[in-house]
Structure formats: C-alpha cells, structure tokens
Length: 139
Image (cartoon, rainbow, N blue to C red; front, side):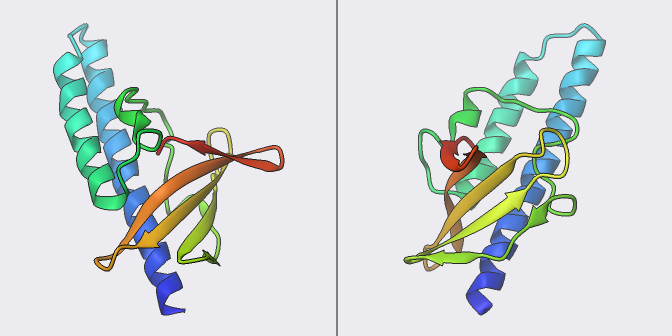
C-alpha cells in the first residue's frame, strides 16, 4: 500500500508541474502572439523548463520526450491531477501502471508506467488507449 501511495504521489507531482508548465507557456505565448511579437525566445525558455520537468519525473526516452520537439500547449491543459481520474496503481513486475482518465479535452485514457529508482518513482512510459490497445506516446 505504501508503494502505491508513493507511485500516485509521484504521478500527481508530474501532472501538477506539467499543468503549471503548459498553462504558463500558453499564457506567455498567447500574450506575445496578441502583441504580434516573436515567440522564439519564449519557446526556448519553455523548452528548457519542460526538460527540467521531464528530467525530474521521467526516464529519458526519445519517444517519451518527443514533446521537446513539439512544445504543444492548450486550454485546458493536458494534465490536471485535481480534474482527471487517477486509478489505483497495478503492479506489473517491478513497475507499477496507473491509468488516468482525462476529464477534459479529448477525454483520453492514459496509462503511465513508473519504476522505483531507489531515489523515487520515475515514469518509464506513457501509453494512450486506442480502441482496446495501448500505444506508446509522448509525455
């Protein structure tokens, strides 16, 4: 039970920081666009911020970190631990899988797989449910 709580807390931490990152990025970017200003410095700033979040909460992986290439942001944000339904973690070998049901936007269903590094839980991968199959996707 203690491990399950730690897994959920790690995932909520990631979701909170991603929500805050996406909201701040969107707000700053839209402000620049509305003022007809260049957004490239803003993009660089938020790319660095996103890399910090990904480094803190996940294992470096080309597919998982693909969001660094395409800095998508929207309203409402992709992640929100207060809005979305976070299901009970299920052990898969040494890792835990947590299904999250998005309650806004496309109402997607995600599965996060986390592993214990000895220094805390890190996200190994995120998958999106497509029909009855899981497909690996970017964080």
